[in-house]
Every structure is written in structure tokens, then in C-alpha cells.
Image (cartoon, rainbow, N blue to C red; front, side, top):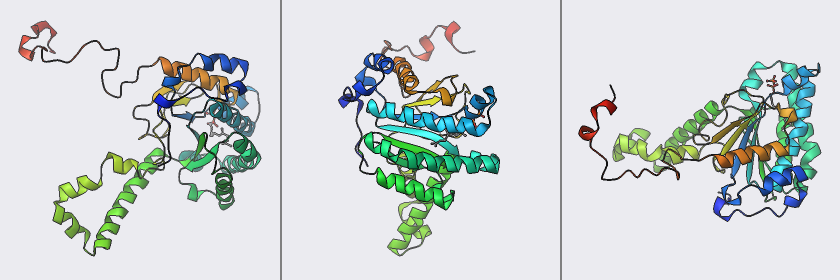
Length: 308
Ligand code: FPP
């Protein structure tokens, strides 16, 4: 696994002087010990942005692609280790008109070709998640080229989710686990049934299918889970994005449409995130109530407080 920062050894970025004065003011007020490692963004509202200006939808996407670079460069200036952008969902691929899909594919190739130099100047590494093998071959070739060109960069990893759907990602991971099981039996020269029976079927399955092993077969196996999910354009939904990985992520929804979103807004979302108390199912630091031996038994709880 690629080395990641823990928030404890997070430092002030030595590229902070590259931020705009407005961004710098927000950044300087952030707590370096509470920086997220991974931000995931649902970029929404390109069509509405264009519609409000009586422009064709594709111009909204074009402006949206420009914003990607602004936002990613701000992320790199603050040394954010991981940023993942929902650029094209499986559902977009299946349900949008073909000419819009073709335009998005062209835009993606143009984006990669014209921004690889900037990625390298900013020490950004490109990665992808999704059923990318179903994308047109020329798009896959350009993606491959961009990831090779930026592979040696050690700063922010920009992951584009392309032809991505979280449910299919989980299905793909489950299928890989089953294939692994069959390969293991094959390697041992016995049938799957005999292999499982030898260990006891329940134990054998439990040993091979659990959270860490399923996580390790997701497209995101090399990344930490997102700490923060940002969604632009005001819709309060997740739209089949990283469903497994965002189990404990904080969610920040802004009404701002994606083509109006800039680095300053990323930093403002981060400031909001730092106000949250993350509990991961526990009680959290602010809870003063210790769950101790002195807790009254159910029989001692006043009857009016018991659930009816
Ligand atoms: C939602 O807008 C956004 C998308 C369908 C994909 C996001 C694409 C981009 C930001 C541009 C291309 C990206 C890269 C990386 C080159 P929408 O059309 O659903 O907006 P609407 O909900 O207002 O109609």
C-alpha cells in the first residue's frame, strides 16, 4: 500500500504561499492536526449552470472541467494526500443521450492531454476508479498515458471516478473474492467443496470473506476512506458514489453549482469539516458521561423513563 500521512504528522504545507490571499486566510485558520486525508467530491450542476445562462449543457460541462483543475491545484497546495472526483457515473453512461456521453469523453481526453504538464508542475499523480475497461479505447489510452506521465509524482493523488458505480464496485469485489476462492482450491488441487468442508464451511467462508478482505478488492484498495464528501448544487443524495467507503465520512452539501466552485470553496468546506465531531459510532471526545459500573440496572431506572 502507498504510504499515507496520518493526521498527527500533518504539517503546514510549504506551498501555502501559492494560495490566493483569500484562500490563505481560510487555510491559516485551519487546524493542521485535523486535516482530512481524503476528500471526495460529487461534481453536480453543470447543466443548471449552463441553463441559467441560456447556454447549451455542454458548455456547463466545459466550464466544469476548468474548475476541476483549479480545485485540484488548491488541494495540492495544501498537501491534501487524496482527492477523488465523480466525473462520470455508470448511470451517466447508460442514461444520458449519446451525444452528451461522447462530448464528456472528448472533454475528458482534452482535459488529460492539456493538464498533464500542470499535474507534473504541481506534483499530482493521476489515478482512476470504475469500470474503465468499458470506456472507448482511445479514452483508455489517454488515461493510461496520463497516469504513466504522472506516476512518479508524490503529492496529491487525483482519482477520477469514470464509468463508476458503487454497487457495481461492490459486486466486482464480491466476484473477485469468489474467483480467489476457486483459485485457492485449484492451487491446492482439491475441489472448492472439499477445501471448505476441511475447515468447516462457516469458518472457511468467514475466514475468506470479511470487511478487510472485501475492502482490499474494491477499486479504492490503495486509498484511505474519504473523510469528507462534498456535493455541489444542493442535492442531498449520494448517487451511488463510494457507498462502502463513506460509511463514516462527513457530508458537506453546498448550493453552489460545480462550475462556480473554486479552491476557496474547498477550503471553506474544510473549515466546516473541522467543526464537526467525528465519532465513528463511539461517544466522542465531548461526551462527559462515562459508561461505568455505577450505571443503574434497568430495574432501578424510574418507571416514567422506561420506553412504553
Ligand atoms: C453533473 O452535471 C456532472 C457530470 C455529469 C459529470 C461531471 C463532469 C465534469 C465536471 C466535466 C468533465 C470532467 C473532467 C474530469 C474532465 P449535470 O449535467 O448532472 O448537471 P445538472 O444536474 O445541473 O443537469
